[in-house]
Length: 407
Figure: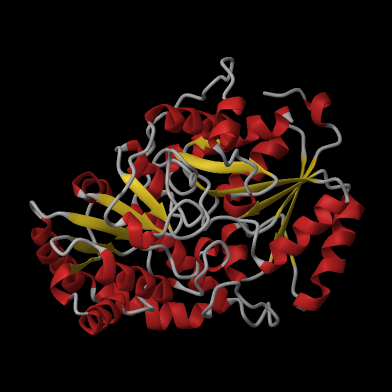
């Protein structure tokens, strides 16, 4: 435990975090260690995650900047904690924090998975300060870097889905109390819940059976794997050239139809946390018929992603962390979007070569460069644990508190 005298002037301001009580638990831990803690809720889902000892912002989005600036000044905020750094409320608060010399800590799912979360000072993903060239990686990888140890932590997918469902439900229930709130996501919580999650749940058996049948085609097949990302993800909408996943799918399928070897398949795997709003199966079937590759396209909604990675020829994606998993398995990776690991010697992107050429000449990653890069990622940005489940959440809370109070 850090002595209280070392953090007398630390005040941590939490904006909405990952679904569930992780930010609340971290706030309690920091408070127990002597720091001041503030939390701002923006909707009913946030209140569900952190119901007591928090402030509720019920004003208009146009008035948010002035309100949060006054709050920072009044309480002497020293550190701002956000989940992602691109949501409109978060982004404005980050700009104001930087102007005032306040540290910004951005959280996200782990760059390396499982068993890790990301906590990076300054920003994550497209705003990350990780080295972006092989030369920078080698320069930054010092011999005395102490790599953190990892404990395996259970993180059930069903629990994450349930927390996302609860967040949407309580956001809807809270609308009378937060009349000006608008989600950062492309669709409202009402639409996501009643047009997405609920029908998606009731069709799960049918979709699982269809996926099992589709995966049988992969035995012994030569295929490229294209893992989808959440359509609402900032990685898709801010750090790729596409407005959404359907546009990205159309781009990749068109290139595959024209340039990929004719004896290969394109396996498109849905994101396990997809809410079902977009009927990807129907869209992919229709577009594959239009491209004349219906017999070479396989859509899979469920199944072990790592097993699919092991069996594939190469991987095409936007910028998913699944790319690092593929590199660890020695697979060639092409990033259509901006990714922290896209650089010569690791994953290819448009600055190195075209996707059209990649289908016939995928380049394998360098093991030494990958090892150095992952070492830097673990030392600088990762904390052991997870956001959602018991022991793993406790590990992450303790690890984040230690790192925050060491700064």
